[in-house]
Amino acid sequence: MFALVDCNNFYASCERIFQPSLNDKPIAILSNNDGCVIARSNEVKRLGLPMGAPAHKFSSFFRQYDVKVFSSNYPLYGDMSNRVMDVLRQFTPEVEVYSIDEAFLHFQGFENYDMEQYAREMQKRVLKWTGMPVSIGVGPTKALSKVANRVAKKFNHKTNNVYVINSNFKRIKALKWLPISSVWGIGRQHARRLAFKQIETAHDFTQLSDEWVRKEMSVVGLRLKKELEGISTIPLELKRSPKKAIATTRSFESLIESYEEMRERVSTFASLCAEKLRAQSSDCNAVYVFVRSNPFSAKHPQYRNSTLIGMPFATRSTLTITKYALRGLEQIFRKNIKYKKAGVIVTGIVPSKSKQMTLFDREDYRHNLLMSSIDKIHQRYGPHKIKLANQDINRTFKMKQTQLSPRYTTDVRHIIKVK
Image (cartoon, rainbow, N blue to C red):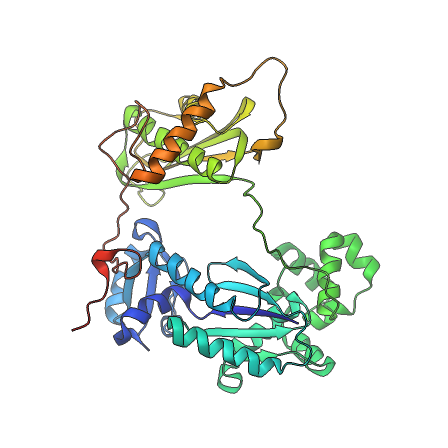
């Protein structure tokens, strides 16, 4: 059996754990630089606040309904996620951390267990040890555990946020209830194609022939169909695969117009990408750079552009990646534009130990030795102690976070004091 454990309103719950007065109050969490709403409590959903709502346009809405608004506190959320996952690993060694607030668990050899009772014990321990409320769906496959989780959350007054699909009757009943557009792995294009074929529910999808599904939706769609039929075809991913692309993008605190200042920012972003590459023992073959103005400012000229620069060899050197990122910036930068955001993305990522060498172009061997020394210094003394000459040595990026809550679990200055 598989289980999907999903933290309820994760970001809002993290805030409530340390501020119980927020229980049952409408809560909205904002994106980087307090731009738009990225998470909502059930209470604020019922008030009609849409996901992605620009914060500056809904300030009166927040005041009218006394919505508690918070800047995103990623150090707190990440640490609380790790604590929840550590508790889950006490129940089975096979845990796939699917996202910051979700995990798949595989229960192999648990045939004689009462899985509903076991799931409720998990739910109880996570709540007691971390304060985090969770919903748990259990089924014979990963896809069916996703379905069971949706049932548990939708009918929480009956299920108390735990539901187990352990019979064919329950499986068919759940699939007939679930719209095809809500099935895990069914994107918008496939949903439209299936709706044209009058496939309205997940159960309708399982009635299609294997041949049609494989032809129209590839082997991935066929695996999903088998999963919904109760045949496990999608294994747990116990090890995280290296990222296929690594990005560092930022919205600026204030508009940037000068090339020198933009050059410094892009150089910093490229350096951060290179550090992330080395952290996962990878190299990249290309760098993508983009810039854009503020789309919400009608009084300023609008401009956005990007470019992809290929490199002659795979690298993880800050020096090389920054060099080509700045070459890309030269191509797309335009004068007399007030820029709001820029970013660097490294792609064509390959493992450092098995990268393809070139016949004529190769990197200076001293780069790897230098990068290794810099990384060791940063590990010992903290990040950003050593920078390139084209970076501002006194500047660290600071997001606009006017509604930031304390970092209760990751900053000793913010630990709760018991009187």
